[in-house]
Length: 297
Ligand SMILES: [Zn+2]
Image 1 (cartoon, rainbow, N blue to C red):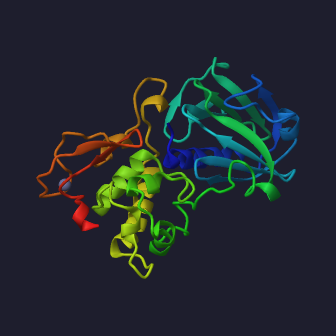
Image 2: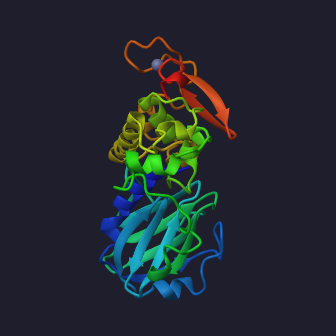
């Protein structure tokens, strides 16, 4: 499943092909993906210019000259292919031959700059919607959504405000999309490891009795931003369902320090610990019992 850094990588890859261009023709090959396409989907896009391409959590947001926003979510296996000047690339990491429409190419955007952007989604957990810009924050996709972890909102103070008094385990609190939006399992494991925080420690343990952030809260905010930024810079990770067409996986997964490394020696210099796995809310948490002791929280 694409995580936030991959979605940001895709955004950066699509931006030059889409922003400033008009949709000259939109081909929609199915009535639905995970959800039905909005009414008159192709007509509402054709003729409109893309004025900006943004991202909120794991959603891509294309602002249109009509005042609507094209909301796009990649689901489990969605990907975009950009064809321009005779070559096709998948933002942002590999090139391949792409002749004609494939079985899972569900939407094609032809743009006034000559680019074709194809949305491919084998499992169809992705979706697209059209929402007025003025109603975006209150729309079903974004109402109640937590803060953006790559933005300026994330700080020690914010963590203190969000986590104060919470007995929820840190892992669960960080995955709670109503608090912080778009953080997935991999990056939560990495961030807790780098901060030396036990995944089962109560979220409220990062807040003093006076409601102020602890040193670890400040550190966690910085580390979350670091792990996400590093992943964006590495081109996003590509795991399992998001395997490239040639079957190979993205390179960034090899630099995870703790994720999926159960039984391996801890990556912290001089630590003699072994990476352990526990299951929280049905999902695997990887951590080093030596570096991430409960008593340190
Ligand atoms: Zn360790």
